[in-house]
Image 1 (cartoon, one colour):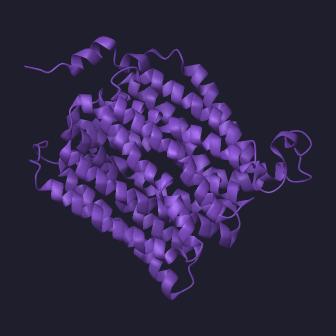
Image 2 (cartoon, rainbow, N blue to C red):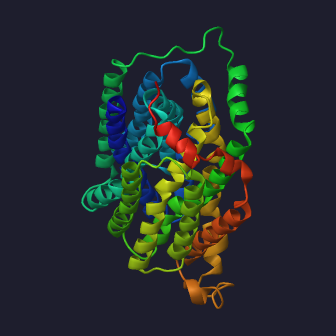
Image 3 (cartoon, helix red, strand yellow):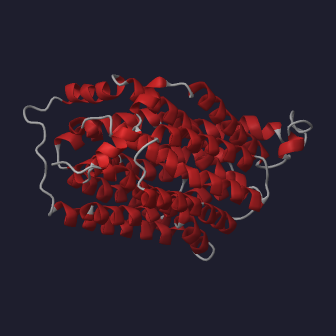
Length: 431
């Protein structure tokens, strides 16, 4: 746990830098180009390479030193940020330059996630998995809790140059903590023999596709990622339609306190059973929150529903993470997490690619002052700039509830869960 804590601290700091850059680029792109599709394009390119390359990264994580892979991924991801910063400093930063920079950063970041998740399994015991997952959620929440607040304040008196520079500096801290831990960890023996990438990648796919519960879980999380990705991408354009970037930063940071609260509760409670139930309840509350978020322009209503969303999100992530981790053999976890990542994140890819186009060319025109739905749905959601995005968000919340109702009787998911007897057995020390 001590070694895990060192790595966790580094990733916590890195998460703050990443969140600041993400927030600043979203604001910069929307204010410069004024269309939601530009924001979604940048978001899409920031994630797609890391998602598509995750199976290869997982394959490498099962073959080579996982900590060193994290170092390479973190350090080289700074190259994309440096590219954006140099073009901003010495020229006129264009949309295509931002797209190239975030793509470069995403390619190298792909090495990080499977190695990080597999490292947790290396370092901890089964009874510590849920607690560690809760702590990982706390680190992840930093990019929603702390980053928008800091970035919003900085953007009120400076531009994104300082934010990019801060993000680059956080990478040095992260790399240092990983290298420090790696010196004190005896690397576990990896699979011997010749390296057959296609065969080993096939084994990773088999570990996921061959397990009915994992298949169902991945489908459910892919759909959840679609709706969450849409909210993540469209939140800035929706809120900026009636307020400024500083208030947007306050809104995201304050509401993300919920993620911190949820993560702390999980860490303190050290939950060891009923993960399937926790997954379904968390997703149901996510859906209700998204319905509320999209229905209004009232700052306080959006804040309260975002709080509900972020409070329940860690429970969704931890329950899915723990159920998968306890049903996949450690020797293939790197490859399995790579496969799970690409399959579940397909939902994010679709939302990043489609949300901006749907907002600009379908939903927003419907709720313009004289739009087709202005006199019907518009009486509930309102009309004008950004209201079509609100309708999209609420529809996604409804779809989450519908999917959950259809999957309530999933036997394969229930069989992956930990029973009361199993939870007691895990907590007992072995001879």
